[in-house]
Length: 77
Image 1 (tube, rainbow, N blue to C red):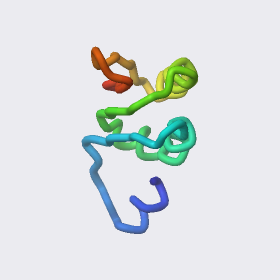
Image 2 (cartoon, helix red, strand yellow):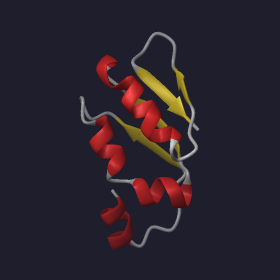
Image 3 (cartoon, rainbow, N blue to C red):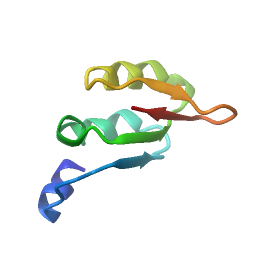
Image 4 (spheres, rainbow, N blue to C red):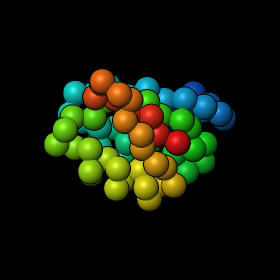
């Protein structure tokens, strides 16, 4: 995502929705610069086995995660 944002000349990111069927961490790792620079709000679907890993990763960028009740989605700010 970082590469695409740079190529397109994007200078602002407010929201990101991620639903990548088990590749959550890989998707987030590919947007590290965007997380640092823009700190967008994130809605992400996370498989049960990945919740703690995703939470630890996002915490390094100042995010906290809240589960969206009745779903496998999380709201991250």
